[in-house]
Length: 439
Image (cartoon, rainbow, N blue to C red; front, side, top):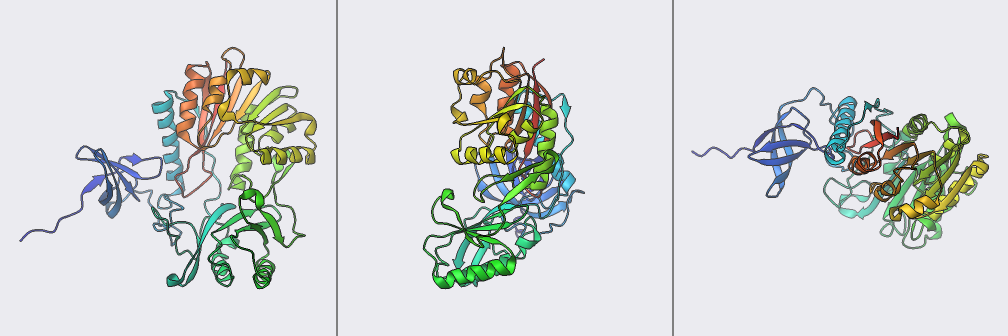
């Protein structure tokens, strides 16, 4: 009698950038969802290529001591988190290894010092989120939440552990609210922005609301103490709907005595607790001095610009978004820092040495780019006359490592320190910071 075919078995060696376990079987690299280092697992492949496979765990034969029970009941179905099965310390250690490996492999550099990882709340930390909405009658009505793993379907979520409890508890009422609207098939997205004094939900509407719809929204806003905004097209079209006398959306940086107003569709960090620590560490590493001239590149709405100015330096903030620059100018004025700040709108992905030279000399520079990194900026910094110190805040360790290679091997900087910031616990996202010095 033929024995039933068994799933292959692998020993997990490490984690990749997306939090998948890495193993090697019969000369192929296997990336296994839900596996942790040093575990022995049975796996089943769902994607096969000549040199690698993507797989998922079928059974754990030897369990890691770092494995924990995921707090979220939707873990494994929802694609929003991939590492809730590892304890917080193991998550941060894995992210630190990802950073170090990228610096060594891509950047061919090594930090003289590893910074202590920055931790924050593990649950309920996400104050910014973009949730999808879909009317699916066979699933009981309307779904509100994040997409399922490896799917365009929306997870059937009734709670979310990384959202603040107030918002998590609101998911089911939101489903019921949208189901009762006349445009339930024409409302694809709800964006969340929680501030210090008001919580905003932006409804992306493809058709006008009826009078009955508007009454429903007002009643919901009153019951749940939130403010609704309506967005008819792009992010710039978002406008407040109800209540119109709500406090202004803002976050604060108490260490620097700064309040930052913003609109709910404008970019801010999703984790305000970590952002405060992040800004504090960046300023300590940058160490701007009164009278110095500092550049803040990819400055956004001035998250780092204004704290630098508060330390007495003169700051030039450059950002590609005209809307964010306008908000930064308003914030500088509100916080009494207009005399020490200047802002420009420019595409930093098209930076050249000539443009950089035209900006004048900077004593120090802070760079906080999106995932694509700051390659053209780094290539444009003068090896002879560039800033003596650069602090680079990154949301992608691969592009940070690539740019570090230029700064160290071409421009003559030393990588003094680098470390991770656990901005997104439960996920594989790696936020990091690096300090470069010209000696």
